[in-house]
Image (cartoon, one colour):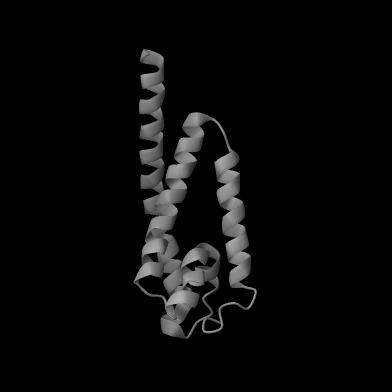
Length: 118
């Protein structure tokens, strides 16, 4: 019983640390996305690569609205939590899946779906 509690605590700690590191990484990623947007007159390349889910949500909202911003703010902490948990559990399937989904979403952003964000 003690062994399983120790593993659970270690997994929660690693997940929390990963989320914190993801939140720290999010700050420069958000800055890069804002700078590439150029106050609406830029190319949005960094935003498409770093925050593809938020950019795809603009198809529903018509702009980078509150839902897209919320998704962008949560994305890197969630990725960090996933990586932290993966390190603790010593499996990598979930990280490869998340990376693949991110790549597909980023490619979709460059496929012509986002007409207002060239």
